[in-house]
Every structure is written in C-alpha cells, then in structure tokens.
Image 1 (cartoon, rainbow, N blue to C red):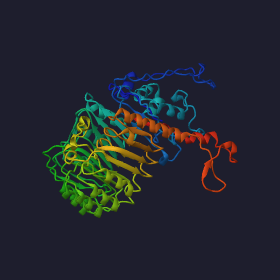
Image 2: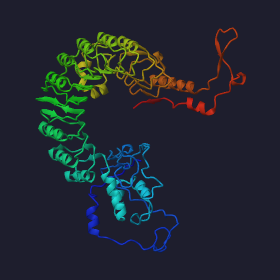
Image 3: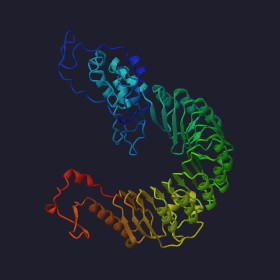
Image 4: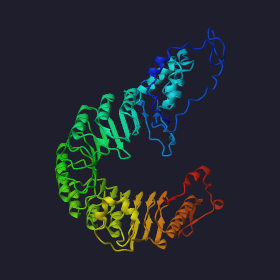
Length: 590
C-alpha cells in the first residue's frame, strides 16, 4: 500500500527530540474501557483516535512506503517480500498527495493472524503487532515521526520501517543543504535503489555523501531541473563507479562537465548519460554492460570522437544489447565502426540526429545485425531505398521502426514498410511528409535540434497514405503537412498522432480502427477534428451494438443475421455483453 505526504525540512530526526524530552510514564488505566490495567482482561473496542497532522503543502519531500521484510516476527520467506520507501515528486499544483492508485501486492500482509507471538503488547499501547505495522506503514514521514513519539513500542516499529526501506526517491530543492540529504540517507541504510531529482547543482560533496550512506547501492538515477547541472568531473565519476561493486544501473542527466572518463566496473549493466559535450576520451571497461544511452548537447563546437568510442565499446562490451546515441556528429564512419564491432546480441539500435547517415549506412547495419527488434534512425538522411533494405532484412524480427524527421522518406516508403513488416507494432514517421512552403513555428521551436535535416530537401505535397496492418498499435504522423489523404485499416491500433497535419482533407480521412483509444489532433483544422470525432464515435457505437447470431440461407448462398426470438441459440448473457463494451475513443486537442 503506497501513500504520499510532505516532509518539512525541520524534521531532521526523532532520536534527539526523544532524548531531550526524557522518559514518560504511561497511563495506569486501560486505553479501551478506562478500567485499571492490573488484573484486567479488556473486551471493549478501541476508540477512534485523531489522525496525524498533515504536512504543510509548501514542503518539498514526499514519501511512498510499503511493508518491510526486516521487521521481527515475519514468518513468510524473504524471497516473497518487497520493501520500498520512495520519495516521489510533488504534484504540480503544490499539494503533497499522490493521486495515483496504489499497486496491489500479494505480500501486503506479512503477519499471520494465528501467530502466537503477535498478541497484545503493552509496549505498543495494547495493539497487536501486525495491526500496528499495517497502520504505521501507511503513515507519511511527518506522521511516522510523530507516531515514534507515542511510546517505545511505536518508536521501535518506526525505526524498523525506516531501516527496511530499499528504494528512495528524493526531490532536492535549491534551498536544501547537503546535511539534510545526508540525514535522510542515513535513516535508510538498506537503500538499494536511489533516485535524486536535483533542483540544485550536484557536486562532489553530494556524490561522496551518497557513496558513504549507501554501501549496497545497485541503481542510481540523477535528474536535473530548473537549470541545475552535475558539477563532477570524469575522474570523480570513475572512482564512484569503481568503488560500488554492486552498482548495476547508472542514469545521469546534465553531465556537461565530465570532460572525459574511463569507466571500470564488473557489475554495471545499464548506463545512461545525457547532455554530454566535447569529451576528450570515453573508455568503457564494463564486460557486463548490456544497455547504453549517450545523448550529446547540440553545439557546433563539439569535438567528441564517436568513431573511436564505438570501436572501444565493441571491444570491451561483448554482450551489448541496446545502444542509443543522439549526436549531430554521427556519420557513416561511426556506423561502419559499429558494424565492425560484431555485437551479436544487439537487439535495439537508435542512432538519432545523424544527418550524414545514408542508405549505405543502412546497408552496413542490415548486413551486420539481422536480428534487430527496434531501429531508430530519426533525423537521418535515409530514403525509400533504405526503407526497402530494412524491409528485406528484418521482416521476421522488427517490431518498432522510428523514422521521424527523415526528409527523404515519402508516403510510398511508409506504405511499403507497413506492408513488408508484418510484426510491426510501433511506427513514428513524424515530420517526414512535409510541405516545404509551410512554416510551423511550434514545430520549429520544439525540434530546433533537427532543423538542418528537416529542411534540406523538398517534398511533393498532396501525398496519400494507405496503411492496412493487423498488428500495428501506435502510429505517429505528427507534423506531416504534405499529407492530403489518409486511409487506415488497423484493427489493433490504439494510439494515432495527427498533430499539426494541417493539409489533411476531412473528406479523405477514413479510420477503420475499432480499438482506437487516443487520437492526437492538436493544430488540425476544425472540420478535420469534427470528422475524426464523428468517425471514432461511429466506431465506438458499432463496437458495443448487440451482436445477433448469423445463419446461412437454405441454399447456402450467404449468411444473414437472425433475431434472438427466431434463433434456437440463447442470447448472450448481460455480463458477456458488458465485456464487449469499451471506453470511447479520446480526441486530444492539447
């Protein structure tokens, strides 16, 4: 059971406050019926007590907690238990409550009702230990700190809750000092997964604090907001990774000051680094690395040698499966280095923003990695010929194809891909079929990184797109201003993006997608929006109509529908008809 609430910074801990207050005697009377406790066996009901005081909305930390397997008295195997204490982000409106529904877990109850050791405990104010644990695990941090002041039993239970936490998600505003973050980390010594949302700079002091307080860290994620950056160099990062023998996943956003690094780790399997710039060296000595994501900032003076980096990656990471590189310096030579690496286990390849990646690069990829399941060449110079090579090599494996902002791709190439790739489930063709005379200020503002590639060639306008696919679930055609007609027959399609398709004619739109759930139509004409709404409404009504049985005519020529009164078969029960009904499709305009 998860919950969220805010934790004000002034609640640094409860041990010091309890020491100043001193020990207090409890009541001699029963808390249920008011009679003396001595020789008394109470059968009364526990009165309803006042709830804990909610935290102020202006505080900056939020907590979600789940039961612990480290508490005493547990009888279930430890392998079936899950511990989590996570600090989630505050709501955008400033409230400290998470409106998401809690996850249902089979291990929600950790105490057996028939356990003889879980009887009434005088140290816990007469509450059974399983009931006390179940209540306190739902308290917010401020409530948990307040509950620890009630009595010794409650304080010990609260300490076990803090110590049992394995996952911590912490939002650090600009005005929070490092010692406060250290105090939170020291309260949870068993942290395995750590996520920091930094609104202030992440420096070497904070990194040392994490290294000291989290000895068993396996996953760490650091994201920066509001102009914050990660002010650590490559040597400091390399020492941290080398010291953490159990670190498996490292994700960092805002790494513009690394300069260069030599990562050495025998356990690291996932590495995400973004906002990289002008790295003098990138060496990976990580034999267990399976997934890597490197995103470089779009600056003209970037001097990173991607070809040498990819060659090193192929030598030292033989079991690599997923590669994502986003850089304007991606070229055909970098693709050739990747093809020569011979990463036999590669399944997902994403090379984004490489305007110098051409059809020859596609041929090198296809000849070296015939088992790809995802291929992302967004922002490249691939044409319809490259798509033809993709279809010839990956018809039995490719499920996701992303070709957004590829100016040389036409509607014919898109139709050919959907026809030749039967396993395709996700396809992104945004800003491919573009009208060169159309100026979309919003698209230019959101995609400033790809202006060089998107405006290099001129496309024919008034193009027609016909797609009939049995497994396609998501199709994105955002910004296709040169698209004039669209005909879709995709029974499994659930999400369609038509944002900024300004030239799409309302009379030339046909959507035969009975399972369609969301249609994005921001920036489209009003008549087109009305056509979309009417077609999805008709599809929804057709899906929930009562299905009458069909029978053949006596001559066997055709099948006709027969009313239930004339049919020998009983009508469908009401519960089965309810399952046929589905939620109507949403047309999103923002």
